[in-house]
Length: 317
Image: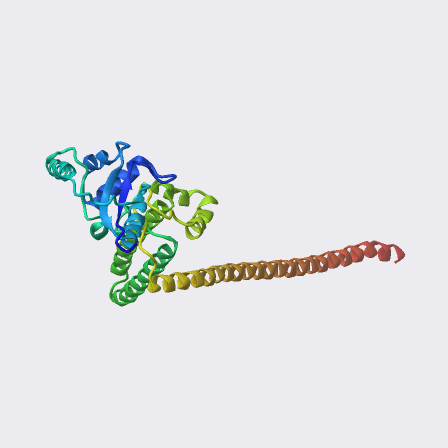
């Protein structure tokens, strides 16, 4: 049984949910070939992509090919028969395949076929998973805070010499930092959208009121496609550092939310106290004014009474 050998056979079948164009692009990338050559594999006729394999190696190669989006299968190799005609036919087939431009591409599937895509940070191409999206977001935020802190410190030193120069330089540097932060954030988010099989143009949903507050949560929660999709092979497995950074970011989000909420409540309380103080001062001023007006009215009444009494006194005399 240990001498049994196997081969990988493909007849053009695709995995559920994978488009033919996607699978062809993935195969072209993994075979280090071009799409025109890969087209020859999709004729509907069985093609042996790899021969003379042990069962364990065949399983490894089959898994790697499945990540491209195709449905290949393992078949047992036909025992070699010492027949001169078959030997001559096999030799002719291999010779014609090597020289014919219509022959299917040949590659060492196991050695040169990467199972996962290559990670690229500063690009809108490729895919990243949920945890790596959180980890990269945390790193981007920390770098941004560190740069802003350094710029603020330098700005204080410049402001001691000239406040005008400090304001101009601070505005220019702040604008440049904001553009850089948004640009890198967009690239990371687009790759996360690709991992879900969505178009990168959906990033603009972040700018829609109400939807923009829910959309980032979906990017952190929804799982990506297990296999290859139209945007490439799946991203590599998460390393320990990626998991740690993702957990740190998840722990930091509630703290930031609590800080913002506490700041908002403090502002509301301060405003409420200010309104109460203003109302109290207004009421005090109104009471004082009424008392003053009452005193004036009282004095006028007394004077009127005195004036009315004077004619009476004159008449009695």
